[in-house]
Image (cartoon, rainbow, N blue to C red; front, side):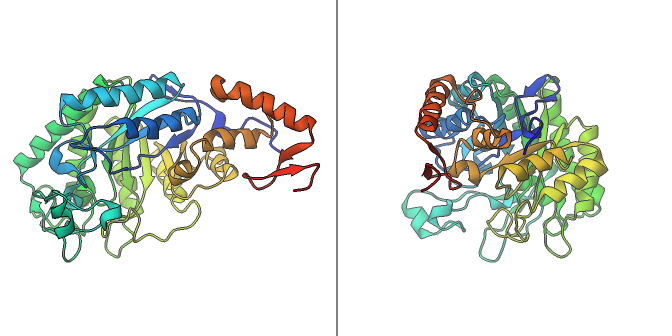
Length: 395
């Protein structure tokens, strides 16, 4: 029986921002925007997580330039016109006691591809018939994702300078939209990851070859963003802790990179993995419950920086143990929250082994508390199955 407050329920202060608990909603691409604009779907999608009790709610990967989108359906923040819809979302998250966060990204060689439900591969005639024609793809080197994918143009130093400024402008717009946390996406085979991995970066200039050189452009982006992002607001960076491919990016490389990120004012490293080859996020990394938690633990310990753990964290006890044992500072969930947007509230209630609905929004918590008392008087209680009830101890 839980004797103390769950660690998941404890606050975490990062610079001037205090998370009400240690549960985050990961950035989850919905591929449902038009010209990068958030709409009512995006508001409803993210608002339910704020109502569901998460301490930190991330808006999905948001492109810094139109050509940085993965698909035609990606969100964008490349113009001031994108700010109002995102501002509405951030304001609602904060109004529910959550912390509003956004992930800024450039897809690199994984840009200009199909939405997942249209094939999740290179654009083809079926996409062209829908009016979705491809655009030029750029990356660290002219190495395609796989055979049959677009060959990216190797970025010049002037390209890099332009994109650093695009990241900065997007960060300033994120500030204008009211976000409290910003994350730079440097994982999953997208642009910054393509510089980090020796498998996708075969440059012979100052941005290729050695580990130091391969880290150079991602570090420059982070430095530029940190300079324009308010000093009292935390900055996260998402990394693929390992490529999971022979000869690729290793955990020791991530530790080295994390140390450099800390020196540049990064507060939290978001520890994912894989994605360098193939469209899936972790296509080459073997999965299992909590399969990436060990990465977060090693980076936290060896780089002396706060980490966020993510990946098949499925049950409350598992999530609480990640925090309690010091493996990470924040636990992020994704598809579990898609299945049950109230997962954070249910998790904390289960860990506390009580029937209180005090954490719930007043508009629902008041009714649920009364309902619970009424059902208890009738001898009706929850079954071990979350969708069933026991009456007098029998289903």
